[in-house]
Amino acid sequence: MMPEARLTASSLRAPRAAAIAGILFSILLIFSLVLLRRSVPDDPTEAGAWLGTRASSVAVALNLVPFAGIAFLWFIGVLRDRLGEREDRFFATVFLGSGLLFLAMLFFSAAVAGGIIIAFAAAPERLVGSPTFALARAITYEIMNIYAIKMAGVFMIATSTLALRTGFIARWIALLGYALALLLLLSTRKIEGILLAFPLWVLLVSLHILVGNLRGPPQVSAPALEE
Image 1 (cartoon, rainbow, N blue to C red):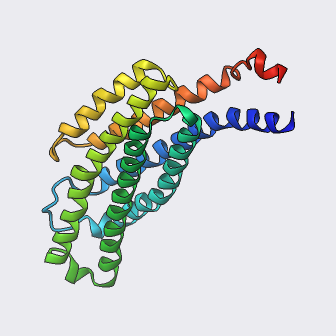
Image 2: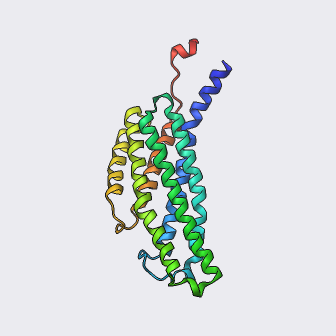
Image 3: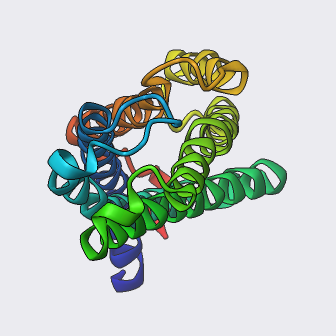
């Protein structure tokens, strides 16, 4: 009975852990993206005048990214644990790979942006308007607005497909994930704030899982009790 009790307790904790991790990731990333959007001009070709007045706000936003990434890794891991043997290997590989690629691009972009701030603090008169700043700014802009967005869309498609096959989230949330993923995949760098669709959808999934978990534990079947 003791191994079964531990297994049951673990299975009950997993959905709540996934929900909490997803909520933390969503809130941290949304706050970071909004703060960056308010601090840094949309035009990637601007000379960098914002560094003189908004560098501290950008630094705060960048410092939130690692914690958002940790929560996202936890979210992925607990979701895979919840799927268990129902997990489709093909879509699970796409699910995991796209999630990790998105996270790697997010971290890389944050690191380049952090390097810009450090370089500005060391030599502000040499960095603003320089080719080095222009290159670093363009790399960050392209990775986040083209490549990271596409990986987020792939992650949403894989997650929604697994959801439809296993039923671990509501069908309408999975269908909404397909629609938002298509929007991300077909979007261009001209659409402002489009990346917010990803953490908002993860927040919706997490809240759905948390509410479902708080309504009560799943019923244990009669054969399992007899064993």
